[in-house]
Image (cartoon, rainbow, N blue to C red; front, side, top):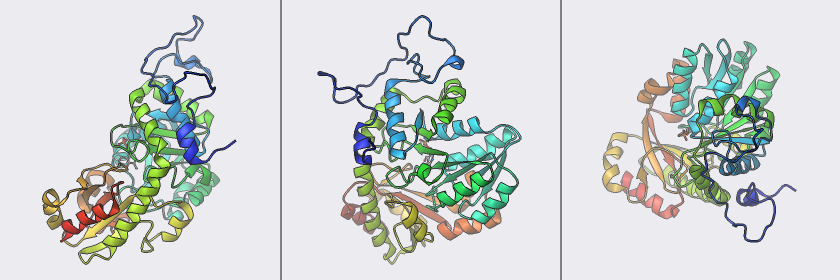
Length: 396
Ligand SMILES: Cc1ncc(COP(=O)(O)O)c(C=O)c1O
C-alpha cells in the first residue's frame, strides 16, 4: 500500500522483516566488497537485474536504501546515487547522448551544468541548444529539428524562473525526445516531475535532501530499465560513486525532509514579504509571492514554494560591504537547502561571461528576473524573526 511521503521518508528501504534485536536505525555498511558465491560473474557487463552485492562501486546496501527512498519520494521506479549532483547530471548526459546528437538545455541552469554543456558536450561533438525552457514556442521550434534529450531545471538556479513540466514533457514526447528535470530547488515535497510526465528527475542531494550542509551527493530517478542501464554503462565505469557514509547522512536528512520543507517554505514566504516592502529593495523574486512573473504556474506545479528567493537592491556593493559586520544569523556562502540561511551575490555580466554565455535576446529575459545582479538567498530553518532582523541590519 502506498504510504504518505512523511512515512515514506522515514521507513522506505529500511526493513523488510521484523526480527528481534535488529537495529531500528539502519547501520552504515562501509564494506567495499562482499562475500560472493564462486559462480558470481566478475564483469559488470554480466550483472543481472537482481545481482547480489559484489563491490561497492556496483552497489551497496546503504546506497540502495537511499536510492529506494528517493525513488519512493518522487514516485519513480528506481534511483541511482552519485558522488555529487553534478556527477548525476553529467552521467545522465553521458549515458543518453553521443556525438552528432542534439540536446536542448535550459539557458539558465546551475552554472556548473551550463559550463559542462558549453565546454565538454560541445567538445564531444554533441550539439547543445541553449534555450529558455519557459518559452514553449521556442522549445517546439527546436524540437522540430530533432533532439534526443531535453534538460530543464525548475525553479532554475539562480533566478528562480519556472518551467511548465507537464507541457514540456508532452512537447518533448510528441517529438521523440526524453525529458530530464533537475528539481534540486524544489525537492520531492514541492514538485514531483515524474508525475507530471518527465522521464528522469535529478537532485543535488547536497542541498535540501541532505539538508544539513555536511554531505555531497546526487541522484537520478527514472524507470527501472533506464536506471539499470545508467548504472551498468556509466556509473560503474566512470566511478562517481557516493560514499556509503554520505548516503547514511543523507538518509538521516531525508527523514525530516517533509517537515523541513514546510518550515523552509513558511520562513521564505515571511522573509520575502518583509523584503518586498523594504524601501531599499528593488525586487524580490519568490514563487510564493503574487509578484513572481509565473505565480499561476507556481500554484499549479508547486505544493509548497520552497526556500529559494532572489533579492535586488540599488547598490549591491554597499550591501556587500556591510556583510561581514552586520550578519549574525545568515551565512554569506554558496550552496543552498541547508538548515542555515545562506546568501550569495551574483553579478549578471560576470556570471554570463563565466558560465551562461547567453545571446542578446536571452540576456533580456535574464535581466527581467535578475537586473544587474541578485543576492541568491536560501532561507534556512532559523526563526524567521531572526533572519528578518539580519536583513534589517544589513539593509539599514
Ligand atoms: C540545481 C542544481 N543542480 C545541480 C547542482 C550540482 O550539485 P553538487 O554541488 O552536489 O554537485 C547544483 C549545485 O549548486 C544545483 O544548484
